[in-house]
Image 1 (cartoon, rainbow, N blue to C red):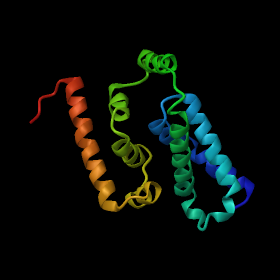
Image 2: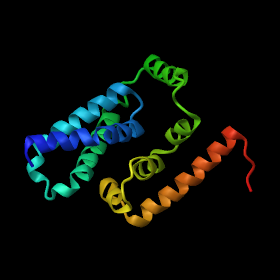
Image 3: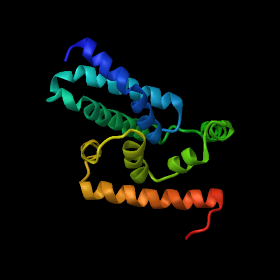
Image 4: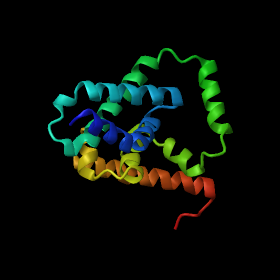
Length: 162
């Protein structure tokens, strides 16, 4: 894969990468950092990609590792003021729907497979490779994530269980 092909593939996956980074990280700056670091690492390690057909899956795995690294490195560094500002900024934005908030409120174990499958359209096999989980684990997390999301949305919209 040459530089032009790499650039084209990254540009095609940019929106997907953002959604995945956003599912792990809470603020825009961290998402941008994770995406930038993932693209840089992918370019540096491009020679290790065995099959160009799996470029997007490979890049997504690198991005998830970057997100986890940012989470580990920032755990002790977040001040109360920064946390409060982030929470207030999210609640003040009107473009976040109840559905988005409900999805983002899922535990990370359920949120990541949910976004990869339903938002980004990855196949079950690709999600298993990206998250390094068995197919039965991914299926179970999707099932439980749907149940939790349904319960949250029933609370928001007041629908009765049938």
